Image (cartoon, rainbow, N blue to C red; front, side, top):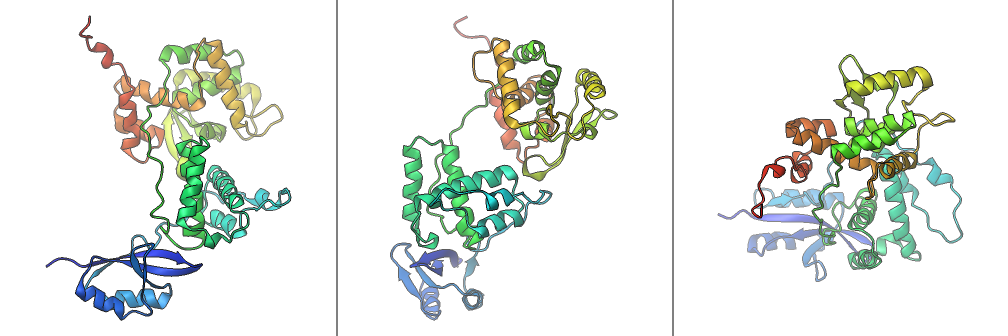
Length: 374
């Protein structure tokens, strides 16, 4: 006997919320669906729909109990606040000066970002992308915008030459409003994402990295480059380091609230430890390990400039970023025989699949293969 199944979907038709019911043709299921309150057929979505009320959701589960499996994975949103993340500071968005006619992000959107404890980088991305979207539809009620119009908007971004990452961020910001703020999970299940391209990370050789460090005369800048490379840190993780995070007794660096709000440990270079001790005695930073001339945290753009200048001094012609040093750290560890699971832990990757990308750029074993032309 085949298992009957009904999948629930969120639909918005003429500005009203409905429950969509998807199922394969079956006389028993069809007969029970007809007994639901005000069932109607949507030619656009190719499914039956009924008014979205709490009573109707409960009725569906009661009516089909023992007859069909009700699949609610697209209807009920899972996941709560980002554990460990601090509340993001969105006050600047509430009190900024706006140009005449500019449509700001709704207050409900900002509140939900706060309650969900999204990282500030994500907040900035979501607000920027969503405000670009709502100002594209400046004179429209947001709940009136349909999937076809959203798909057309994303296609316009692609035609303008926006990257796949930018288009995906735009879609994420839009889905956040309709699915999280307005409470319609997976409503836009028919909106396609750009096909993800498999790009290999750019890495430097050990000689190039060491040359960058040697050519950097400013000691603080030299230690910044050394830490990015020797510990595999993200730029934001480096900027958040405090002196107490350098655990010299265990030769470890504690990374607090890395990507996803997670803490982790990574390795500390013995050579760099001696230099950091001398640096600390001279500069006596008040809070962060690396602070600007006027105190306070270094900016992300300053770190990018430091790395870029060092690469030019080392004679490296391609564009070098702080994240490239992190990629190089992982690749060089792999080439030196470090187990992939340890590298995953040091980098703070959730999935081993993310770390496995470095197996495609590690060249030590490839260099042992004799070319057939030779």
